[in-house]
Image 1 (cartoon, rainbow, N blue to C red):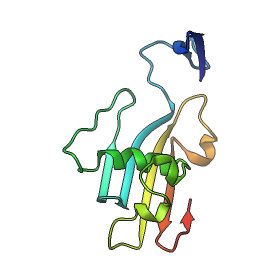
Image 2 (cartoon, rainbow, N blue to C red):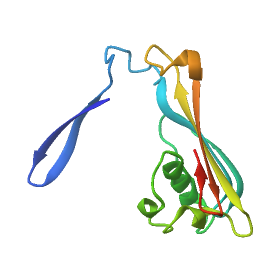
Image 3 (tube, rainbow, N blue to C red):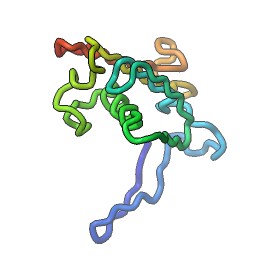
Image 4 (cartoon, one colour):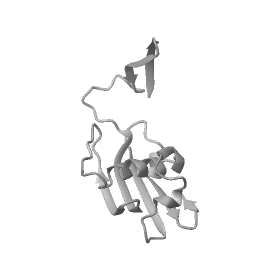
Length: 140
């Protein structure tokens, strides 16, 4: 994906976002890199959360402390972000639910169409899993 930006007076405005193969119709569904699902097990306040997302706009609503931000934090951690980047905890083991010894975060990315990444190896879905252990180690 390519972004074209124009800057003026310390403001950045995105004028156009263009995908390779920009000649596809506007109604065609994106086929690669879309987050379709986030699964959290013993992560922050969630014993188990399974969130299915659509390819356009998603709203996650709930009361304060219900775990909305934990879903985004899990996404960041699964995709390789550091704990400190989330402003939620100084290290990964702090994300393990109280009383548990490990947490698992899984992100499902769409991998379909002509630009799919090694479809013969990954198929139409790439699943990224990160396991966080109370001893401090992680398995990706």
